[in-house]
View 1 (cartoon, rainbow over the protein chains, first blue to last red):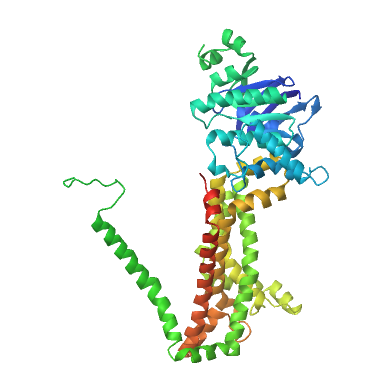
View 2 (view 1 turned 180 degrees about the vertical axis):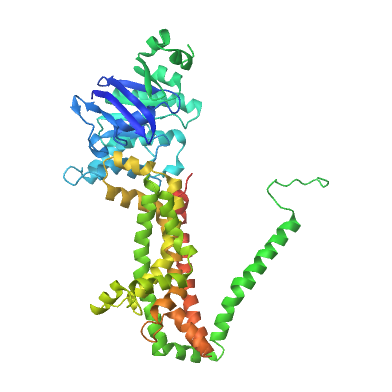
Length: 239
Length: 284
């Protein structure tokens, strides 16, 4: 799905988290929102997911105004920074949650839900952990379960907030490839937030560098590296 | 260290450890255990027959029924209000939050007698609302509604106070995740929020219940202590004691203590039965 952010701004009280920013995300792209903490990248992601509403501006999905759509109507698969798995549910029930939450008219049969959950567990290459609780999983496993849970709702886009933030360096590298693979398999428009420029440069098709609630530069990784648009970008990516 | 053994930095010396344990055991025995035993000893002074006979008196029986009824009404209501207040305070940002928290704590800092007087002043026959309600045949003061109100006022903070820190610690992420997965507000509450807070809620409800059954001051003021009608277990105990009917007084006191012990037992049993679940739902 093609996403367009049109002059979005966000005020929290008297502080401006986002100055009007505009950004077009082509359908099927893998985009990184890169910036230091406080740059407004997570706020922008949450606005896309419908968890925050902009003070002004519009969000367009495939050309349709989606600014007023509720978080449920957005159908955005969202992966949270600390994964926010439901700790009192098994992995199976976590992944099935979105399907069970559908109104009865569109809710799949029990057997169909089980089939889909099994398929997703295969996709994240953890076929045998359905009956475990989140507290019994490693950090990397939790991240993949969170991804499977987000994919279960057949989302229109995938939004990830620091998806690798809570992991050690080795697992991080493995899961980067995992995310790339899942993106390529599903073809979903994917936006992830990171403060790690290596991660952004290595993984994304398009990198959006942000600072102080403004977009500093939008471009392909190699272009940003070759031609940083502002002194901030040059310093941040260490070029 | 002069001797060869090393001990972890957080461990006490054996002497200090024994002294601390002795202090705790002594304190607990003198302050909690001895009085509790004394209640039962006094109640059974003239034998179990005399104790049971004093309980079978219709006023004693009426007091027990009234106290259980009051708790059965006020505890569920306060649980609902407590959940609502804790939800509101922890899941939303708004102006005046600190003031609301102070307001919830108010019953802890106000003397129950003052709380009772406030209810008498607001709903008594001398106030406009009170007079009107009496005319309609629904008196508040010196009747059951007043006792319920007084009990609810005094026990209001227990559930909310127990829930707020737990809900702050858990944050909003799981609720947000459920929303992004398409769940509506009620579904999020029943499937995510409530299961996550159920243990804190249980402790809050048990504390609230114990206090609701034991409340004396506020209830004494609003109830008028009419025997067989508005006298609860605690106020009846006091009246019996004042009349030197110590077997009857202590027997009823023993009943009240037993009710509290039963709730404690229930809590322990639940914890044992769900120990694995408790461990699984705790963070890591």
